[in-house]
Amino acid sequence: MVNLQQQMSYRGHARAIAVLGLPLIGGHVAQFAIGLTDTVMLGWYGVEELAAVTLAQSYFFVWFILGAGFAFAVMPMVASAAATDDHRRIRRSARMGLWLSVVYSLLAMPLMWFSEDILLAAGQAPQVAADAGDYLRIASWGIFPALLVMVLKSYLAGLERTQAVFGATVMAAVVNGLVNYVLIFGHFGAPELGLRGAALASLGTQIVSVVAVMAYALWRLPEHDLLRNLHRPDWEMMREIARHGLPIGLTTLCEVSLFSASALMMGWLGTLALAAHGIAMSVTGAIFMVHLGLSNAATIRVGNALGRNDKAHMVRGAIVVTAASFVLALATALVFFLTPEPLILMFLDPNDPHRPEILEIGVVLLAMAALFQLMDGMQAIALGLLRGLLDTAVPMVMAALSYWAVGVSSSYVLGFYLGYGPVGVWIGLILGLSCAGVLLLARFWLHTLRQVGVPPVPPGGAGDLGAGRAA
Figure 1: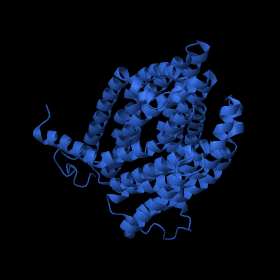
Figure 2: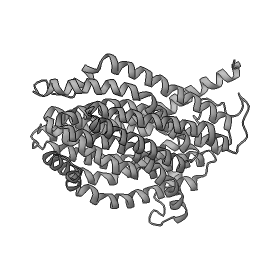
Figure 3: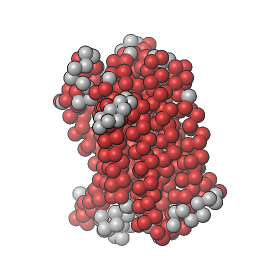
Figure 4: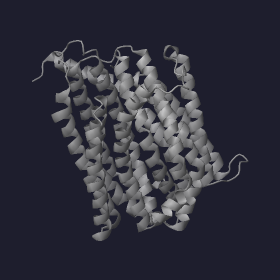
């Protein structure tokens, strides 16, 4: 039985994670709401448009998330430097994160500009591929501000200014929703632009976001002087960020591409299956944003504890954040099992003739989603913990094996070779996520944590500061 000091320590960690994590969770949910708004409003606009934006956003997100690895690398580096008030290292990390994001965006643009041809080569229906390409030729320009704002948010989160991250993202979600409403449907005298309107709204929102977040950083954190020597490359720091950022990006890409591959497979099964898949993924994706916020909190706390040489604090924080994710997964699984219809129907026009068929498929997919919520959350938390310790290379290999060798191959075999259709594709998702969850958790608890060469601090010692700094 743990003593009273340890109990207080765990309660302190819970409070600290709430103070740090809730704004991050809110920020991720608000960010997700930007894409969700496109999905919901285009679902009201038409099933064909819903299928196209599902495919387009999956394709965009693959390239976006690979580039976001540089931003994810900035977060633990800033958190660790903040523990020792190393302002120079904080500035160098953030500045070179911005540099790498711009370079990557330039390389990614052609892949999105010619997305229609790529999607056709991947076996998508000609009209869906054409509509998705039309959307991406506008929305693709948003990768520049989107990746820049990711770096700035990681910089602010590493400094534990998570309320600022939350505020900026909520503002962006509100702007996106309003502009979507005007441009998709042609309200208030604007032209009815449908898919193009959604793409313009997303692009405009990303531009507003990066301007707002940069203005906040320069105003509230003048001691870091982020724009000083912005034109000068810092090759040493750039290599360090790239060394961690590329494996992080590839790890996340492996996960995201598992879901993008499932969207492609659903497209082979027909427009209705793809539309139902898009709805189910939107619902489960909203819940995953909570796990992702907890994962970011884990990265920050582990990175900060590492910077302060406090291993005991690190271990207790890891236990608390893992338990929080586990409880959330159980609660959401229950909701998916008991009330799937209302969640699906909010995406569909009541007068849509295909509504019953999409609902029938979607209910089954949400039941499947209830099964993978647990391990999806666990693998997200494990990745956050490992990133806090800058353990990125081996987790990348584990992710590739889990998501592709297990997940994608199982989805294809079960969905097509064995003829289970949409259900088979989603069973493959479950298998891939479960494999990743087991391997990554084992990596953190049985290997990486034991390699940390810092002396443990006794329970109740300097590490038990609760939420005062949420360090």
